[in-house]
Image (tube, rainbow, N blue to C red; front, side, top):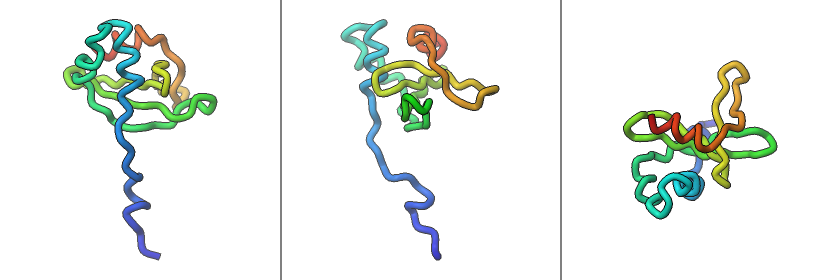
Length: 98
């Protein structure tokens, strides 16, 4: 059976900027939408079973990634556990920006 594009490339899904803008609003207020321009949307990744999908963003200057759930909750990748675990939103944002 031949391999199709669907086997190699996942279907296109538009970026989800809402979680990032929600977290940035805690720091930048109404300028959160402009502050989100410093990030790239990387894509969707599997999160904890009880949370589901996470959105992964990368800061254009620091190249550090920020993983957020649909509501703006932050997650950090734990190498030893090989999974994402809950993190403080403010700490995760600071780690991404500096």
